[in-house]
Length: 317
Ligand SMILES: NC(=O)c1ccc[n+]([C@@H]2O[C@H](COP(=O)([O-])OP(=O)(O)OC[C@H]3O[C@@H](n4cnc5c(N)ncnc54)[C@H](OP(=O)(O)O)[C@@H]3O)[C@@H](O)[C@H]2O)c1
Image (tube, rainbow, N blue to C red):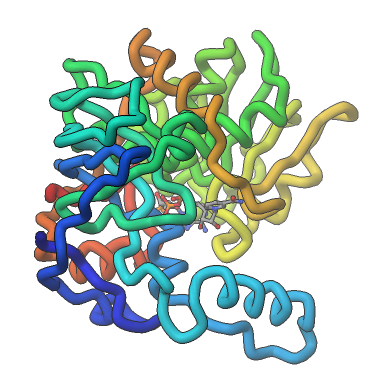
């Protein structure tokens, strides 16, 4: 089968189109023919993984070392990276009861990776954890693969805000994979949502449910901030602006500020099932920026590396 191998940690060019053996499912596994995957921010971090070099931050070096022990020291232990997929069950092992040949499914693989390929086996344990669910007919494989990562992460982070009707919520970085779903979730819970993004993404963010958008690139943007009950920094510590610096000062007395970099979130079972229900009810839609064929994965990574994708970048397999 065709697959993309990550030959070492480094720039997008370390990803190489290869011919590898098609996996054979064990008794407790399903074999999925992948139709679409996505290039997530985490894929780029894993591919480009660098040990933090600054000795004044020993905590970061220890974290880096632990990541390498987990992922593989000089290259990923599983050379086929990729976290999300949408496709069709091609065959099932005899112990699999939940799925049958021909089922259309989507989900995430967690730490086993392997979705930059034509086929992927997933175990009963992964399936039982709720990492694989049936795809509704009316969303495409591309839409399903795209929504999983930002969708599940947004579900997790937004839960920390206990968002209720009428609350004022600000999503910083409202145009990314996590941000576009976070805006929709906040709106779904009845919040009054402000999205922070650059001017070209303002209309999109409003169409997702924000009543107000603030352009973080404008010199006087901080004057537009109000007081909020919950603020989600949906882009993480590497992306900042004057608006973001000001955000921690514009919380109500009971307000809460959460960053997507606050803690490492292991994608959990309930999140995908809850997300699926919201998609099926029409409350959450996928935002796709670009689509590339598997053969152009290097170009896709170069684009995502720039840090300005709108929603999601999909790979058609
Ligand atoms: N804790 C965890 O478990 C966990 C897991 C995965 C990821 N993460 C974190 O989540 C982050 C976000 O992931 P993602 O996939 O949603 O990101 P993403 O889609 O790559 O974010 C791209 C978006 O960020 C916006 N952006 C860039 N610079 C900005 C700035 N200075 N201020 C505001 N917006 C800016 C861009 O909009 P413009 O073009 O308009 O600037 C673009 O739409 C990752 O980088 C990672 O740090 C955390």
